Image (tube, rainbow, N blue to C red):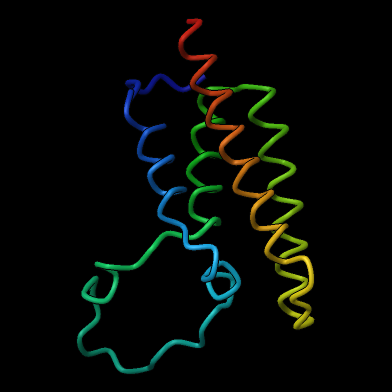
Length: 124
């Protein structure tokens, strides 16, 4: 088990990331751009006002759960990953039907995982 100092507001920051995810941008956040070959002006200038994506929230939560295992949160996270694969497939096939409900369910599952982590941390 890794011994890293606990950051009490790590879950808060993950939850803030989840709150900043814009449901309308979720399919767009799943696309991978070819990028620009121009090396000038690289940096974080364009990232300032950008909203986070579900993928980023999932990654941070997975990283947190690898250091602080929690079965309930992990099962919710696994369901989220399945939903994300479905969303990606629907977007690839240009099938918008049921996408909004799937995004809503994904957000609820992520909230459920965060609540499970908070509950486990309070009981410690």
